Length: 213
Length: 228
Image 1: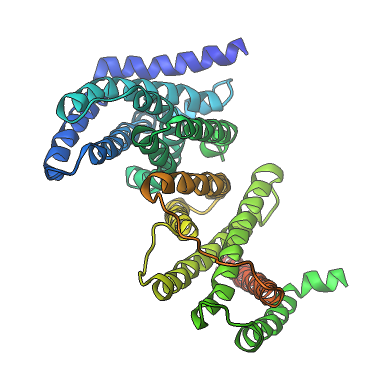
Image 2: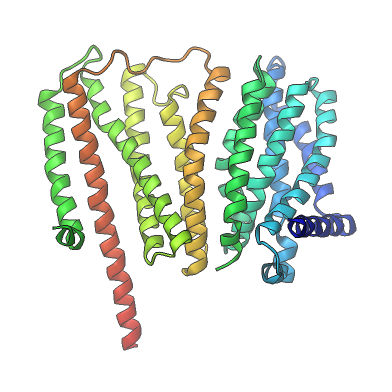
């Protein structure tokens, strides 16, 4: 058990260290989400109301995550690291978990900028929305990293990621927007937690088959 | 008997499908009573069985995918692919028949408050991506693994999406349509069951037909390689 946690921590640390040195994913995500919020300002005619803005916030979150996820396995592929990781004497699901934790860190950092910006540009963000963002992030990163690994194994590569990911992200959007706009956020938060638990379990259990033959 | 059935599954299921489909069409046309919706309610006897058959296809595809990953059953990958392929066809037919029904019943081709239709749209998108994934990988163990894992995601996504669409209706459509009116009468229920059996046997027949074709293709390729 301790070995497993150690493996996951080492893998996550590797990705974070790589990002600290190369700085290519996080700045892109930050600029992307800020530009998206500015676009939303011009996409919403006056009188459209706060609710439409809250809905678009969720669109921004999913697409920003997608931008980061499309880079998730690029280093592994270009340098042939994945073969080495698969051969390493650790459980293969640790690769998925470590990568998910790193992706989660990037997404949370991007949102730490995006949510205050949204509050300044559009409307204030309440506690339910922040809780929903936190829960949605887990699901987005768990499923997104998994699907990104799948897409990396194909010829179409990054092109395939949005096609595979967006249908799976529809329930996250429902839970997130519901928690932001509905009067009682509880059941939407519960739904997001259910999504996280179910998909994290199936990703954890089946990741081995994605990276091996 | 059971060996005969296994060897002649295509013939048996095709014969059963032909008999049941004829019976179903006859029952829908002459036996099932009209309810207060009039004639257009009859599309219900095709729309709902097709939708349930599509679920059966996706479920069967996921089961074969699981068998591939778990027991490495030879051929399970091909069977999973064929079942999902048919599921997408039945799913597209569900969308078309549902859309026609919505047009005649409510005057719109598309209703976001119709939960089943929206669910099928999500599933249609999801399973269309299955083909992109499958045909973007070289045939071999990797293609089989990725397809099998994706088909398992499908059976988790179906209930989750169903729940999501119910939840979304609460903030998008506060007033839900009551879509089915009164309970089905006995004769209507009987007709519905025959229609469902007909669609399921049609799925079985098409499944065996496509499998036979694909296996023949593979066999032919092997022979050609031996000759070449």
